[in-house]
View 1 (cartoon, rainbow, N blue to C red):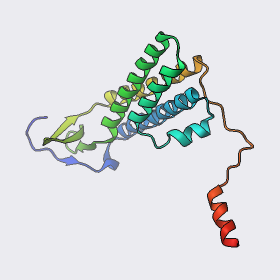
View 2: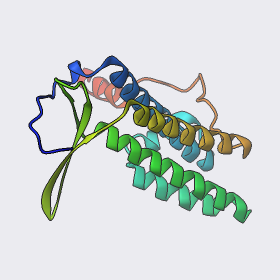
View 3: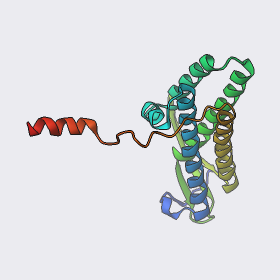
View 4: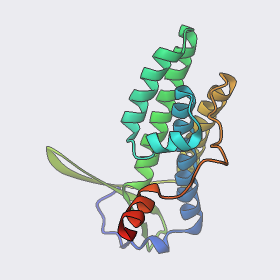
Length: 187
């Protein structure tokens, strides 16, 4: 960006609707990709999806990746399966980085030119702030990459018959700890 003064508007509500749509698409694609990661863990563990969510919901992505690598080392005998899974996992990690670039930086619009910019601040040893133009096509391409990374992982676990089952309808779904407290209070 040149050094001339720009009249930047940082109110996200004033970004062009097509930008907001593309940013939202990238975010929802990543939510789906995250769910596929959780499915892969549950499937490799051989548990249903509800138990899988109990185990994975609050895991960070690096922890999920580590768990997946450990599980694939145990589960897969064919080295080509391990190699393919690692390739897919690397793609999912790249998708996470693309998502983070979209959601963890501020957005603004030049009120005069209507150009859209992203403000990226880093503070590693020194503070560095970049104001960079971002095209709508770039955001859409990132959303597509994020979606494809998740779908490829999903297809792989599906072809390996590792999709977790749905939880049993007969499983109790009430808060057992609350019931215990209520029972104790009643005594």
